Image (tube, rainbow, N blue to C red; front, side):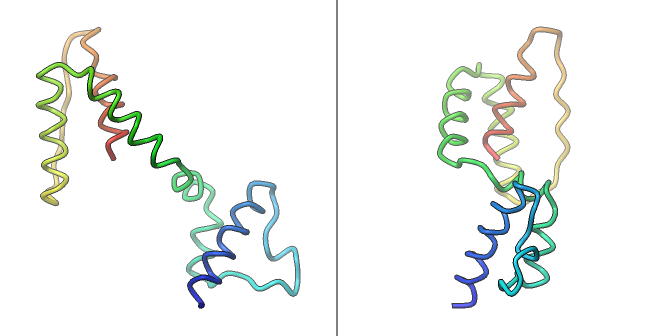
Length: 111
């Protein structure tokens, strides 16, 4: 029951924060626990977590269909490294107009 209450309060707090106010403006309304409140007050976290997953998946699928074989190889390497839980550094370089930005956007939509 506490988890449902926190999730409900979190959703209300997010809506209020978009309008520049908070649950704290409405006493005696219950407020979030301190750890939940800390994540809610950070607008960057709110914005980062507020996305449409189905759109993200659909966008990745449409972008990845247009990758060439070399780009697919890079994408597979990045995804495999991530799934193995390994740390890695990926340096992507090529001549101008080789669609490096397109590949990066595809990788971003994957994660």
